[in-house]
Amino acid sequence: MKNVMSRDGTSIGYDQAGAGPALIIVYGAVSTRSSGSKPELVTLLAPHFTVYSYDRRGRGDSGDTPPYALDREIEDIEAVISEAGGTAFLYGHSSGGCLALEAARKLGGKVPKVAVYEAPYNDEPAAQQAWSRYLDQLGEALAAGRPGDAVALFMRSSGTPAEQVDGMRQARFWLALEAIAPTLAYDHAGVIGKSIAVPTDRLAQVDVPVLVLCGGSSPAYMHHSAQAISQVIHKAELRTLDGQTHVVQPAALAPVLIEFLRS
Image 1 (cartoon, rainbow, N blue to C red):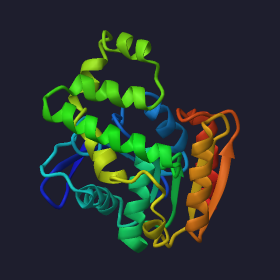
Image 2: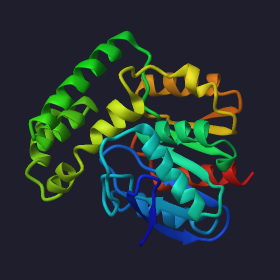
Image 3: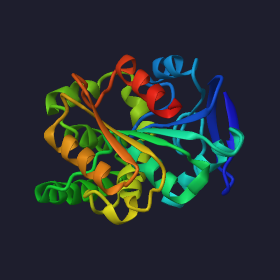
């Protein structure tokens, strides 16, 4: 594990693996670089890229410096890019995809290409109402010092059945989720913001090639959002991964990333 200092003095922890063009992986909500299938994806990409897998601020081996701002997260990515030699591809999953697109918009030539998988925007009016309620309830839970309730709220809003969430709260890994629960506000109130609709004005400013990905077995709104993103970014292409859901399998994802980023 290595560390780099972001502009505001926050230490960002990361791993570096492989050889070739630099690729930074930007993870989504309640994720660290070591959780789930993240290490497997790095292993598959490392023969083709120098892969930088980092912990976003407030998680894992990275520090945190309040108050939170989206620009600070972009500066974290910029700091890792500097460690990588000044330019790097970005791949972002879920809300990490939203962050990767914002970084590409702000950092210009430092990000030559971006790939995003299921950035969770949703243009449906009912979704906006649900999103507003979720942000209010999330803020209340975090302000009251109830991180477990905040994580449970996120899980239920993402479609996990309530009884399954109740079971997860008894598992050993739940404490690790509670430890990074405050970063749910970073992803959702900060990166995505008060509106969950596709931010067409901002995304239209992204001026690099973008691969927009979604899973063939994901909900319809994910397909609609991916299509909307690909239409507003003039250098974007859209691709659906058959049989995949929001929890995309590294073996299905890695070849597509390699093909796009190395072409």
